[in-house]
Length: 196
Image (cartoon, rainbow, N blue to C red; front, side, top):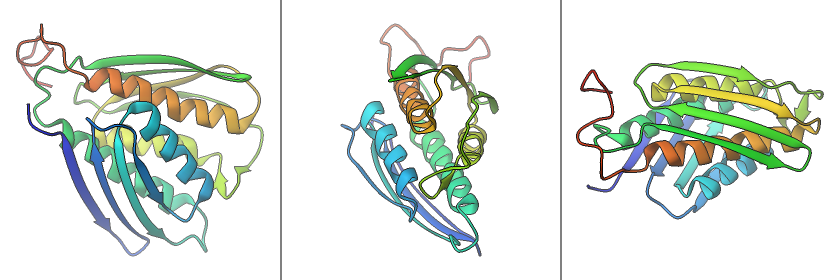
């Protein structure tokens, strides 16, 4: 098995995003998006999924955080899809339940080649730092569709938005790490169709 690394760039009139992702990393992260709280979430994603992640994003933050966060999700999802390659030997499914103080978050992932987001989280504040809380769903929607994965995030408990969001990013990291891991018993891809 070769290294599972992807480098993806996306330039639009609203954003310029560049991401390098190593699925078989050690949790190193460098994130520069201009949105401090979002950088913190990306760092938690990389660290707890043991992915190496480099994110450079320049966006129209004078408008708001929407384009930068959504487009970063598009590029990250694309990088996940490209780094996975043919998906031979991977477990395909992953799930995690993560506690973060008052918050308890469930995440389940299926790297099936079909995009879908199930999102059941409720936030009580408009923003954490300069990141609008409504952008959490938009980010995960962009990741799920560009990665072509089923992704479900569900809030089981909690009330502090910082803890809820951080728990969501960490749960996604752990679920994705499980899904991309290899199982020596799997021959080809784990699908009755013969492809993912």
